[in-house]
Length: 543
Image: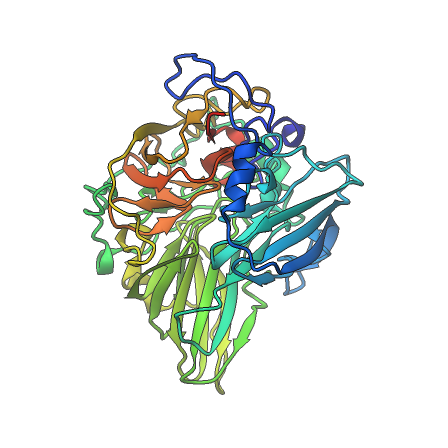
């Protein structure tokens, strides 16, 4: 299929806006007024870059995107695309203020273009990795060098932003350390979560070809998921940070049927339901859910010592799955989300949407413990082990009681005082209606699917120095993890600073940010298939 060439964007399938080629554009109100936009390599971008504090140190890496056969454990071999023959790719770690110099070499098959998006990093616009908006897609046999200052510590990751390449093996963690780290702990464990289909039951392009047809005209029988918008989430308007009282009342996710009442759908998932997600949990059937590239039957193992305090950096690199994460026999203390510190909160489990990251501290007990990433609403899970002593390992099907304990989501957290936005009146408010559905698979923002052939159309206009309010209004029957490039926003008046946040069905989420990074920036659903279908927009500064 030609979706990769036609719509080269989103995280592995997310939208784009016309790279430095955007000139005449309509404003966000659709009035049709002409706006010249800041170009990704223009003077405003260069001026913002000069303000970033640099250590003067550089770290150089080469990343070769090429076909690879990956051992997922348990005898599962997957033919995929990966960086340097491994998935996840090798971790990149540097200190805040360092400059990353990363050369991408494209050795993919079939004239497939690619790019790298550095998810969560507020960098200079021309390094954001979003063709055609911020760069030309990297052709087979060519290279592109990304060079940017990492000016905020935290847990990040990187992946392509062309077609649905996100759902292959082309991803890896990016950790930016703080030389004045305020947390005290003994060790770290980076935990990458991923839903895996590539080279096992099909390819992401085949998935999109099927699910992208939608359900219209099909005899769905009784299998179609009619998502409830209430399910215990009444009054959940995160603008005022109130009304989301889940705590101990969160119920376990409902079982999902892998079969679709006689339909011959290979990839479409029917009946995936989750109260935490407000109804329909996902679109895609995945044969495996991985933790650090390993299937549950042959898990990754962290070995430590009892009593030691470990920082887990949890990253959801999946394409279509939210994970409910718990460590059996332990409490988790949330310290960060999407790289930014929060007021510490002790919980039993976390809900992590695609593109979200959470840092937690845990004091290890004595024994062998299951780290379980339950595929929310999908009746499946990822599985890893923490071993600090003798004992037999629990079975991969184990379900720790913590999964049904106190479950935290971002809406219940509060930003740390050091990173909370100063109180200010919003200079501009944009209402962004999330529209579409499974019937026609016509996911969009404000009813207009992003058009890669006209990426300059209908930008969301903001101006440097403004306090911007975005009101996400989810008119659909599905949840959407909405990711903003180049900035971090704050949920409500005192919520956490994030770049990716879950917007529940039939609910509103209000977020705020300061327009301090000129350029053209993608705003999109981080469900790879929703983004590829058109749920994305261009947030742009005027020239």
